[in-house]
Length: 167
Image: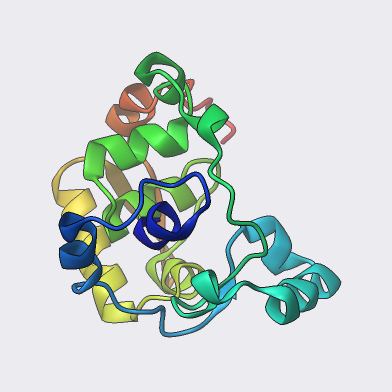
């Protein structure tokens, strides 16, 4: 985003603070489409890969547009209506927030989360343990599997309806 702010025609331009922040950034280990919807459609993914702008490609992302979307700025009240964004507000931009977001609407486990988040199992397991310790995730054994689901506290904080008995 900082690169976009510097280089976009209607961006903020170069600033010493941007350069200092960018010096701490690293490209993604595995390049992918900027948007999940493009990543999941093979033809669109390939198109994004081949037509990606250098601005994005150098960070391991594929995208073809560098205009700032000023209309995407929303008031806090609007953002808090989206459970995924509430999870990010609760945990910050962290693996814990990503684990909560992946667990919003389904039961999962740490191994599946690590694959979906492209994170190591050790890092994902540690994040899950922290979330369980904070009372945000519940763990239940089903044979050899350990299923994870949102706790009633998480569901309340994220603005989701309580679970029904058949869930």
